[in-house]
Image (cartoon, rainbow, N blue to C red):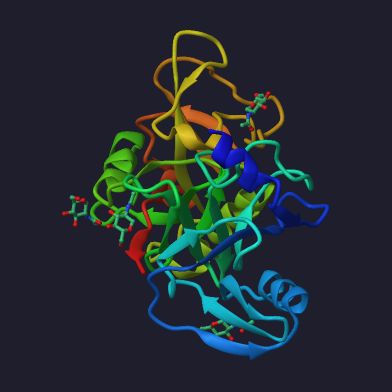
Length: 305
Ligand SMILES: *[C@@H]1O[C@H](CO)[C@@H](O)[C@H](O)[C@H]1NC(C)=O
Ligand SMILES: *[C@@H]1O[C@H](CO)[C@@H](O)[C@H](O)[C@H]1NC(C)=O
Ligand SMILES: *[C@@H]1O[C@H](CO)[C@@H](O)[C@H](O)[C@H]1NC(C)=O
Ligand SMILES: *[C@@H]1O[C@H](CO)[C@@H](O)[C@H](O)[C@H]1NC(C)=O
């Protein structure tokens, strides 16, 4: 234990005010196993600052006062911690707040770094090797969403792919079939977890009237997550990651029925926003309204780099 504390005295951290910004953790150490690296002619300070600002940089190592070794995402898989005053290495991770943590940040806790670049989720995970306290392993993954879905982050390391899935035959169908549509994609019905998600959901729902409406209905409605229970205003949810109906924007006065047998849909059959309708609804008066499909969250494809 005492061994660790001595190391910590030599640990320095550069952070920004925002908790979302990456931090560079500087420790005595050197690269272990790596595939590729670049050599940069620059001061150590500048090298660390450059890495922090570069979305593709994961680790930098001080080779001399005027030179550093630069490791891109996925290129280095182990780091060897060294005795204080020896070699110096800096790695990018996420820390909340802008303070040097009082306990070792490299052991379980804040041991990852995540970012979304062009709708892909890049995750770096740092773990201590089980055989040696002085070796840290870096593993990398890239999560990509299926076509016609969009990636959203929910919580620190959870990502979901959100999209509309359409009924085929018949093209208008009930809430139970909507749930099955999502499950067929290894997903579940979902709902908005925040304002950004809700904006996206509204956008794809409205534009579908022009692109996914072969029967020329006036309105297309989508089942979302939430089935009424015997308790007023209480719903059961298949997807636990959007915090229930916290971010649901209800139509004025809704939910209306608030009981078993009523399911949530968006936009509701009368105008914008979310409402509850009978779970067995499929169409309203010929060509007026069609429950056209489901709003699903499906898992991304995760590639280990
Ligand atoms: C990061 O890497 C990607 C893929 O190699 C490249 O397209 C992009 O320009 C790089 N970004 C920066 C800031 O260097
Ligand atoms: C860390 O990496 C080494 C070398 O690749 C490997 O042998 C070891 O099992 C890894 N440890 C963990 C905890 O992943
Ligand atoms: C669903 O998961 C199963 C088992 O992991 C897999 O074989 C199947 O391809 C997945 N289906 C889809 C649509 O991703
Ligand atoms: C979930 O919603 C409740 C209010 O309904 C709120 O108090 C809580 O902070 C939310 N939790 C998260 C993780 O957003």
